[in-house]
Image (cartoon, rainbow, N blue to C red; front, side, top):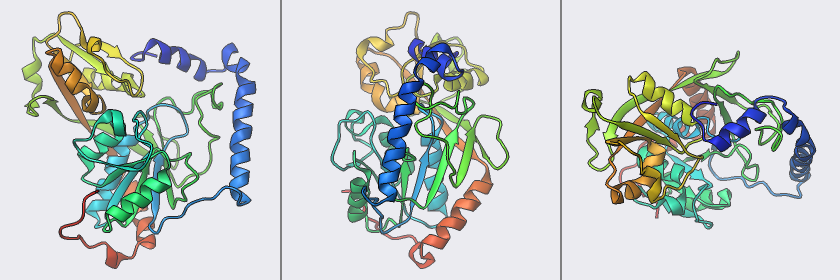
Length: 346
């Protein structure tokens, strides 16, 4: 697929159809499915404990491997909740980070410790954000440090059944569920099941799904923070780098804005090193907000100018109504008034 690294293009070529390689991997997919079913059965029978928090838990996730727009959707969700008077906190596993025990994520935290997506959420959401390999422990730590928080949003937690949840949102993009096979024969992390809401990001929605589009907010110079206008880029030799789940979507957005550039797709959660920005005939490199939180130091050391495309999620307002109706039935409305001097994460 266009806009993907060679490795990801190879994988998705087999995950998009029922190829010979995909069929050859089916025994491993059956074994993976059996392990999922066994774990689910042990939880139903009570042999595996499911942790229930004192506050409601909303989950944003997907059934497939790879990026589908979960982070922008999570940002949209917490903004909707905060605007309605609720006080959300965000919990994530911190994929790509080294932190194992629960740790708070601050705007100046290090991506290699907490993960790139949690750091982006901490910078953009205005909510307490905690990460940890055991997300129930991270959630409890967040609630202990932030007593004003009255609900938890679990980012990329659809398969994390150890933590009980009250509302689940699954998001997919134009790739859908591929060949509908489980890993490694297909992209599914678990069999598709019923959830409270399905969001289709930049794709044709099926009946009952909620539409979402990622819309450009602005371009900004990473070093100075100043907004960059399109006319400022006329005549510049531009490159674009993206280490996200679907780099092609980022490149397509830039082209729709009228920009011309050389594209450089990297694997999702790519950890940038000094040689990654050694592009010939380059005046500036366009990057995603997710890439910007971990590539600034590398680029600065090489004297490379980074320009960040910041996006916002445009989501069907009917989903906001559904979420708020459900949350209102779970949280005491008297406990949703803004709190002056609210505690930040410790």
